[in-house]
Amino acid sequence: MVAEAEKPEDIELLASILEGRPGAWLPFQRRFEGLIAGCIRRVYGRCAQRPAAEDVEDLISTVCLQLINNDYRKLRQFDPEKGYRLSSWVGLISTNVAHDALRRRNPRTYPIDEMEAAVSQKADHAPSPADLTLKRQRVRMLEQALAELAPSERIFVDYYYVQGISANDVAGLMGVTINTVYSRKNKVRAKLKRIVDSLDSVTTEPDT
Image 1 (cartoon, rainbow, N blue to C red):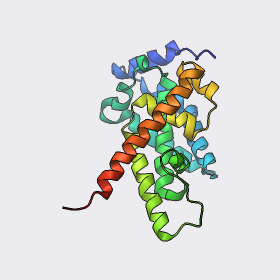
Image 2 (cartoon, rainbow, N blue to C red):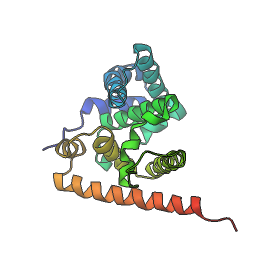
Image 3 (cartoon, rainbow, N blue to C red):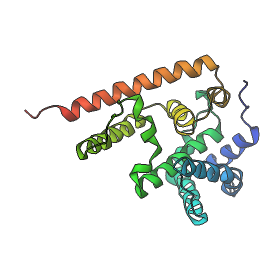
């Protein structure tokens, strides 16, 4: 599957913003507003929630503020040489904003819980309060581990685990082969496990 090429007009819009051309932001916002809204709704849908129209509008505004803040710092971090498109980068930021909003509203619906099986065995009995506390600690550690991944690895995690996109489609989105997708899956899971195990050892280290 061949990845969709970066659209020259998107790169031109980005260049206009970063060069400080007057009126550059509005066309950029119009270009990506639908994508941002779609990512937000997708995250809510995976959590079996339907956001109100005003919630979506608020989160779109939050994404735009993140893109604008600190002299467009997040947009300046975009690097097409790392194998992803501008739309993927904006989509990842939008997805993260939606996750954060859901986590603040109800931590138990945060989709990253679905990935916990990659670093922790699932209990086969009704969880006790201690079990629930341990699980929350593991989820927090996993979130810390995700923050340590490279941007391209976080995009992969979002596509493959959070959004549940098929391996073939992930290959197309990221411009890699299907074999690379499966290889990256194993490497990312192993990396997450190493980081979480390291965090766990620090957390459980006895006081001296």
